[in-house]
Image 1 (cartoon, helix red, strand yellow):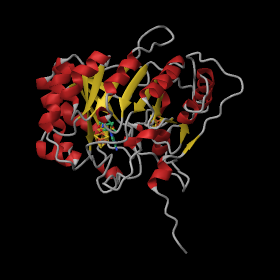
Image 2: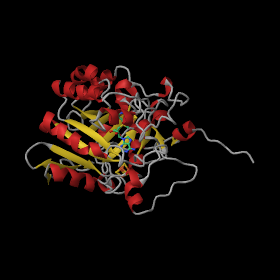
Image 3: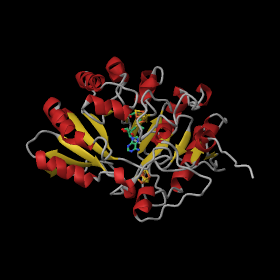
Image 4: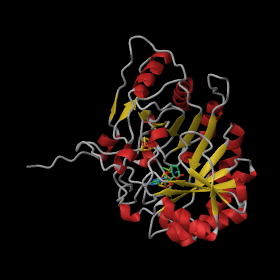
Length: 374
Ligand code: SAM
Ligand code: SF4
Ligand code: SF4
């Protein structure tokens, strides 16, 4: 018998063409899914490429020189992305996050930000536009991004120690350049800056206190350091529970050195649990999607680089909005299709994982993080 090999790309592209209802349903901004969750946050992946090879996201052995990234023609154009974002805003989305891959690798991404900054919610308010980056190109681009209308940035930094940082990004990139990117972002007014540290037990958990100390001493309340539990997203990062350091333990370690006090969430559906230093040294956050599922309030949708809509970070199938965008459908028709998709949503992967109820059909695999963004 011959084994059938299914190339990764075929699985990555798995998506349904959405149903377009015969009768357009007007967007009311009051859309809710099957679990009563509204749609508020759209994360847009602008490239599936990256100049890092973080082992928890794009392990070198898989994403090597033979890996086929998306061709230019499959990517949504800036006009297509802006049209899609406008339709989502009509459905109640008030926050956009550009992500990737590494979003600053997308040529002229500031022009996209300029277009998105012109969008308004049904109440006439500008959308809250932010971007998550590894900061390798940030020092060069921060001013142009700010001028284009970007409000804030989230920067990934997994260690302060240069050797550990280089090991985490696996392309030997020095941490000093990321620290410089943070300084420039703050200087041009992209503040407060959020800093994301993915914690892998045994790899970089010794960096928790040094990084917390550095952020407190150098940036104070202008930066919020967030600790993210290593997640089982995608199918390539070799995840195992033994490498997850639960947020409760991270928090305890920090509390022993820098006492912490709890804060209220600033917005419904917020992913990070907020704490502040008792001495006024600023805020820290904990994103605990492994040990403390927050699906109940999840109001996020994700648009892949090629226009597939995913309703959960751990989804295995998307909805091919690009087919509609390029298929001559009107805004009303696409709005109605988005309404149907969201109305039918019942994703709650993390909750099911916690309850030991996760099962994926054998011919499906979860999409990779660099493809749909964080
Ligand atoms: N390249 C940009 C960056 O790293 O900031 C943006 C895209 S990256 C996919 C978005 C976020 O996802 C980053 O903060 C990254 O650390 C996080 N991330 C990626 N893989 C992860 C995993 N397996 N577990 C937890 N966080 C992860
Ligand atoms: Fe690139 Fe970000 Fe993934 Fe690291 S986490 S490999 S920087 S996309
Ligand atoms: Fe949202 Fe899915 Fe994450 Fe739950 S697992 S919080 S539904 S993205």
